Picture 1 (tube, rainbow, N blue to C red):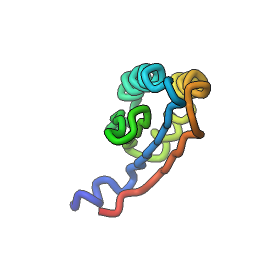
Picture 2 (cartoon, rainbow, N blue to C red):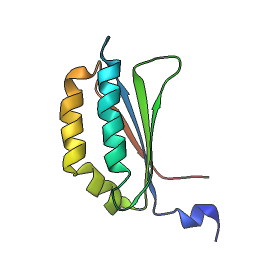
Picture 3 (tube, one colour):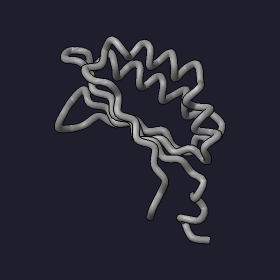
Length: 104
């Protein structure tokens, strides 16, 4: 079985969140807590938080779920919705969420 075949049901999510000026540290705390809880969800294979080197306060979350059901469960989770509500006033722009399937 190839690596691609083993992951054909996996769902990859890339979320980019940009803090409003002066709000990066507060947004980071919310996202760090969200990452800690999200990593414990069934079906979560990877959940990594990154901050752009060239643009402090710009956060990219890389998420991998074993299948669509696991990704949907995360999207409906109370902790995600609470984090998004708390993060809302700290954002300088709407989050950009990209859901992808693996090509290679």
